[in-house]
Each structure stands twice: as C-alpha cells, then as structure tokens.
Image 1 (spheres, helix red, strand yellow):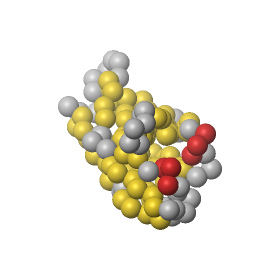
Image 2 (tube, rainbow, N blue to C red):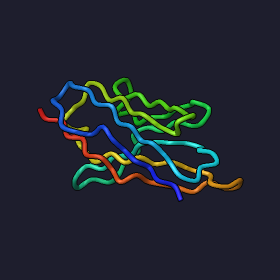
Image 3 (cartoon, rainbow, N blue to C red):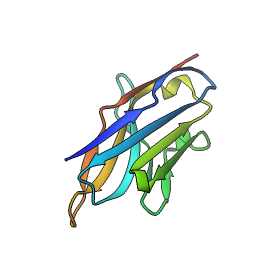
Image 4 (cartoon, one colour):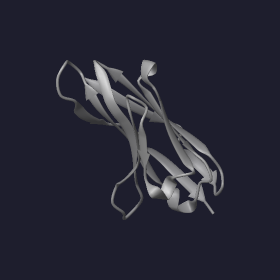
Length: 120
C-alpha cells in the first residue's frame, strides 16, 4: 500500500508565500509523476502542477510565474512553492502520484488534502 501525506497549508495574506510538501511512503518501486490539484468551494477540481521523474514539469496558466513544483526522488517527495498568493488561490490542495508498487503499470494515489486560505 502507498500513502501520500501533505503538509504546509495554512492561512496567509495576499502576496504571501506558502510551501506545500507531499511525501509518499509504502511499497514503492518507482513514481512516474507527482503533482498537485486544488478544489475551491463550489468549483471543479483543477490541476495546478505536476512533475515527472525526469524533472520535466507542467503547470496551469493561472499559477505560472508564481508557483514552482520540485521533487526529491530519493525521498519520494514533491514540493509546491507558492509565491505571490492571491485570494483566488484559496482551495484544498491535494497531492496526486502515479506509483508503481511492483514492475508493471502505475496506480493513482491521492493525499488527504491540505487547506490553503489566502486573505485579502
């Protein structure tokens, strides 16, 4: 079994910064990609950013230039550095990873989510 544990959410004023961390543990053979989604009240979940094992990344237009995703493959951990936060960034942020537990196809895993609230 695989667990994703997030940390780093909280309350911050507009213009401030937060760093989210997601650590994967368990029976991990390899991780194809790790990423972050968010869901604001009354809105659909949206992809924020993800990073592949080779370090390539992709992010939503709404966060480009403000959020940076990075990864420590040795620790099976992904980070999301969020700068210049805006009230519209307020959401529950969830970690997602495609994890291979034995040689073969990857399975999708999710963290429990962490609340990020940006006050104006």
